[in-house]
Image (cartoon, rainbow, N blue to C red; front, top):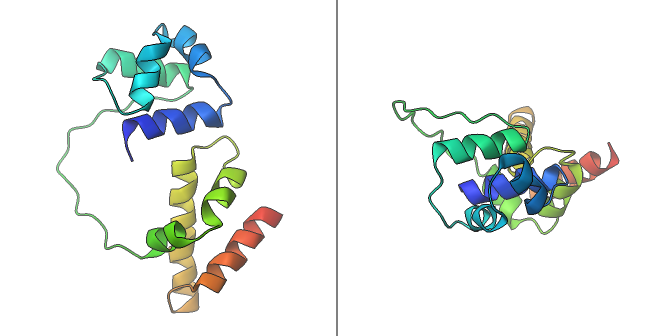
Length: 134
């Protein structure tokens, strides 16, 4: 996920406008809009101020790269679903859509373990129905 997507998702999940975040972070509206649209080269200080304004914490790490887990197919299954993105938005409850999507992928992976097979499109739709009802 790109930085701009993370910033936009977190801002929208908080019900904030770019202008209100700009005031709290001491940054300009065009600067934040450019970052959200994938343009610009922010400093760590600017990112820290943005994170604080959005009620988050900036964490920067330089680490050995961990091996990527084998793809489970759940992310692709969600991407192929006509309903999944609407449900992710509906159940986010203040979390970013990206974080909610990751949790849904993890849930699908756990469902695969319980079923002993990959979930089908029908299984995904039943899970989405359950999430909307909860």
